[in-house]
Amino acid sequence: MKVKHAVIILALGYSLNFIGAFMKIMHRASADIVLLLSTICSVWGIVLLLYKLITYPKIKDFMNW
Image (cartoon, rainbow, N blue to C red; front, top):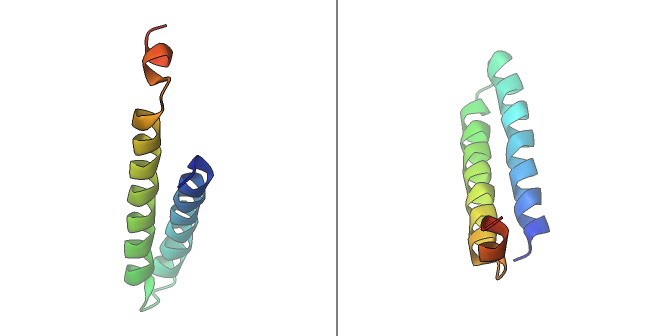
């Protein structure tokens, strides 16, 4: 999986968070499900980005500035 996929998943999570918050304000029944999906997408995107950062071969050179 590439970094762009992790960024897309993270952006999807933030977008769903906005939609879920709007649905919560409007007292829609499915707002809780949308907020749960947005949290899962956000956490998954952050974990993927951290994994890609840790497994990057030149990370030691980057961290030793």
